[in-house]
Image 1: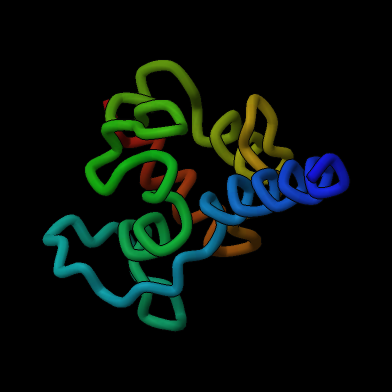
Image 2: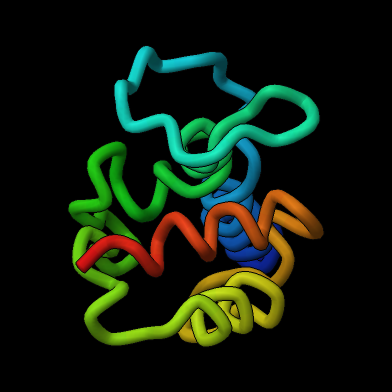
Length: 111
């Protein structure tokens, strides 16, 4: 039984980190569409597919902090930096490129 300890710990860490990753879910029907990307995904759709597991469907926070008024505290560049670099329990690069830019702009407007 003692030999299973490290493996269980590693499995717990992997599950915990993967929970904040891409969800791959479809459109949730939100009327808050954000801006459209070339693939047709809005910022809110990208958020819900990749971030809502930790930050909540309505930005209310779960295992990650609430983001419903994050624009009062952080600029778009600050939010983008957090998305790219991670930190404070958030993994780096959960979303990248144009998607990260789009979500950062959308969140910066949440005042």
